[in-house]
Length: 267
Image (cartoon, rainbow, N blue to C red; front, side):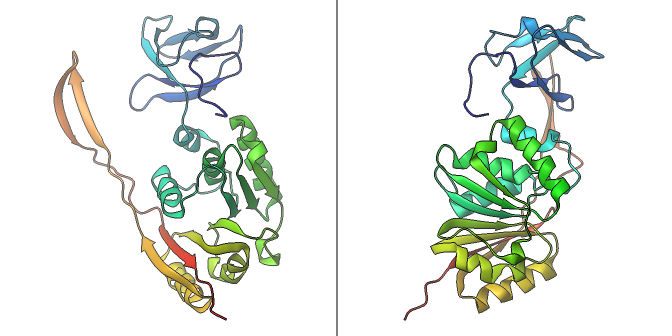
């Protein structure tokens, strides 16, 4: 994920797609193969081929081969903590303006899902400083970032952020923890003038307490959002569309997002 490649190489992670539900991320290794009930895909037949190809398995079933996106990794990463879904992660990126060169403080790291998204977008000269009090979670997150080739853009801190944020003049502070309102004063000290705080919380009482803390600590332009995502099913036969309708299940409430900007106090 350091650089979008056009040709599959030994050691690359690839996304294998059979249909809407059957999708896998695997690492290509010379002399090895990927086994499914739809047949075997030999990696040697993939190496040197362009991404986007359609490859038949040993049972003559067609699979599509793509480079995985951050969203693909987010859902496929083995995790012990609740993830922030792509719909929320992308909204955080847009509303904070995080991009190449941004310096971002994150707490807590969890399994590294959001951290990997942030690291992907602050490249090549930005930095994510991520705080996690639980050593076992931080270790898992480090492995996730190493797997993605993004560890060089992240500084991992096994520390309770309530003890203080070491970085100053950062562009954004992203909070995903149980008591974000207690971090608001620390976030203010760490942010550059006009810098943006974003907090993700599952319950509205957390948002209410955080909003109160933001107002007391001179933050402005405070906004709260909830995103609901519904995908659609497109059925086809022989490449002809037969039916188009919403899926019966959807990604509903995952959490509330609050955004606020640091106000400079007139002296």
